[in-house]
View 1 (cartoon, rainbow, N blue to C red):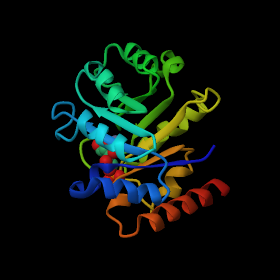
View 2 (spheres, rainbow, N blue to C red):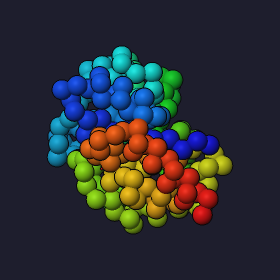
View 3 (cartoon, rainbow, N blue to C red):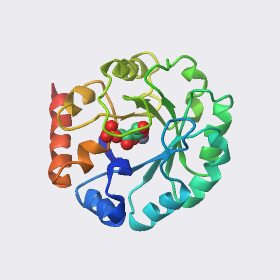
View 4 (tube, rainbow, N blue to C red):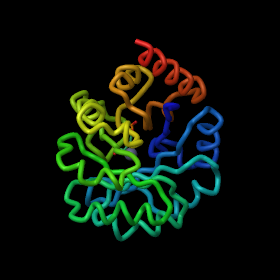
Amino acid sequence: MKKLIAPSILSADFTCLREEIKRVEEAGADLIHVDVMDGHFVPNITMGPVVVEAVRNVTSLPVDVHLMVEEPIRYIEDFAAAGADWISVHIEGEKHLERILSRIRSLGKRGGVVYNPATPLDGIEYIMHALDFVLIMTVNPGFGGQELIPSTLEKVKLLKENYRVRERGILIEVDGGVKVENISFVAAYGVDVFVSGTGIFKTKDYKKTIERMRSEIEKSIKN
Ligand code: DX5
Ligand code: ZN
């Protein structure tokens, strides 16, 4: 399967979001990653359905909405209606995860579960039937521009080896601190979807950056 690159607009220039999205689209991005933060689940506040709708209106790429909010069940319909294609929710503190994932699917969207760096995968086998992808946080959520925590990648290995997610058609996404300089190291673990915020938007030439990312990924897969 083609490896997917998902620029996170958290690090885009919001004074010209339309152009920023066009630029990454023309540069070869596969998904647009939108970080939703509520100031409770994480110590930062970012954007909501209004922004997702605006993004939806300027791109034909799938929109990947990463919910870092308390009680995500309250917002699933809103984000689906705003045009999200992929919706992921954190497992931490969530009592009825299976219900949320089923709700996402029932709205015709792809559902994912997210694991913070310190959260183990225990119990994931019981929600596999409701999952389209798993998002492994490679930084503590809340901010762009942080350093990748290598130990989190062990979970990618476990997902492939112990939980056999590939055989079940479940994709593995990583988020946080991914850039040209380390993407081959990350890809070697068997990641399918690479989120990158500052690693793309804080570079000059998005096309060159994404091309370099792809060739680094290729290199690591061949090795
Ligand atoms: C962090 C967000 C990430 C963030 C990634 O909480 O979930 O998507 O935008 O940014 P970088 O790639 O700069 O670490
Ligand atoms: Zn994210």
